[in-house]
Image (cartoon, rainbow, N blue to C red; front, side, top):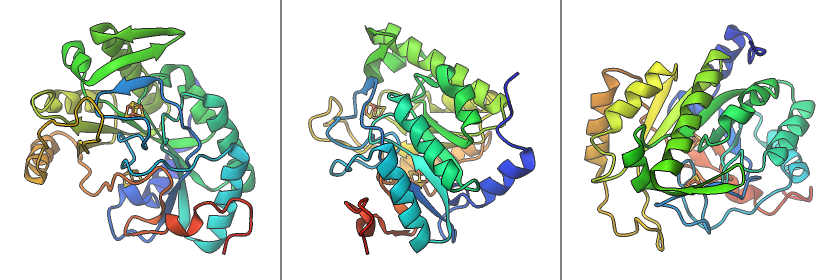
Length: 294
Ligand code: SF4
Ligand code: SF4
């Protein structure tokens, strides 16, 4: 068995001060550090000029920071926003696709602040490879976007998956991705990490399959699921897909809530979001990693 993430009590305390686990109105702040531009899969609802829509709302491309710049930015924000508790890595691509950058960033920030909570979101493809190391680095919260647990459905959502030097398409690619997501989540929850599963609700594709994904997330020991709307991106394969309404999302969450805790307030924040969930201050900190930002 690997080293546990932290004591149960420590993790519970970190969850209490994690705004995403406590809803709007939480006084605590989080910041996303945009250090991970690459991605190793292709979701049909994504165009890679934008932030990863699995965790971050696609807008303009967020500026990408080096690990050193990210650590400087963290220090700067922490000085201005003392209730900053959580550092999240949410892209703009996949946080594990270039793991060296993620590792270095977490190491630098941990050196400067032993108390900070690390939260990471990923498509999960490389989780089995890195789950243990993430725990060692002090990551206590992980989000995986898992839209299906059935390869036929998955093949309609993922165009291809790049894994160990090969590109896989269709059901083969989807099967590799899903197997890794599930193995990764199982390992993380066994090590005490608090896991959330994001599910993008796609009309005519996975809408009736979502309760099965939620049941799987529960079986794997996850804490909460976040059923989300697809944000249509111009130029993506799903650009013209009919949208799921807020009402349909809420109904699905209510249905799934009978078996598992649901997230109702996720804002699909940008990959460089900063502040409390109610008050994004990222604009004040953009392009200011040189240390002279006011
Ligand atoms: Fe895009 Fe995120 Fe999917 Fe990668 S994981 S293709 S960045 S939506
Ligand atoms: Fe929290 Fe959702 Fe924003 Fe992530 S994207 S920081 S879970 S509100």
